[in-house]
Every structure is written in structure tokens, then in C-alpha cells.
Image 1: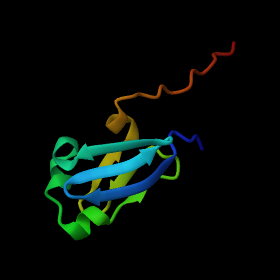
Image 2 (image 1 turned 60 degrees about the vertical axis):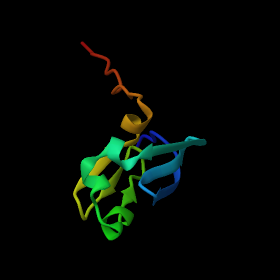
Image 3 (image 1 turned 180 degrees about the horizontal axis):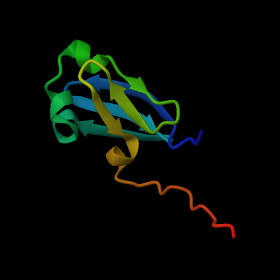
Length: 85
């Protein structure tokens, strides 16, 4: 399994999603990230899992997924496969 990001200290408070990604503090307004997350109850917002690879965060009670790359504004390209003759 590829590790995309090291995601730590995820918190949702005062309408913001905050975390440390690859050693860097990131904080975004829920209204800028996702209408579903912005309108979620406290219970729904606090029930999440971070993928083991650091690819994203999933909120099962509202069926919402957020990619860490999307939060950071970066992309990861799939590996280039060599063609063999």
C-alpha cells in the first residue's frame, strides 16, 4: 500500500476542519470543503475515519469523503507502467 500523506491530530471545531498533514498544520472552513459536512450534526461530524494510506477522510453517517490532496490542492499521479514487448 502506498502512503500518500501522514495525517495526524484531526479536529472539527467551530466550523473548521484542522489537522497536521506531513508535518504541516492545515485548517479549512467546513463551508469551503463540503456542504454536507458543514450541515452535519456534531455527532455526524465527529464520526470519521482517516484512511490508513493518508489518502482521505470518510464520514460514514453522512456518506462523505474528502481527499487530503484536494484539501492541499495537490495531485498524485498513478505510477507509469512500463510496456513490455
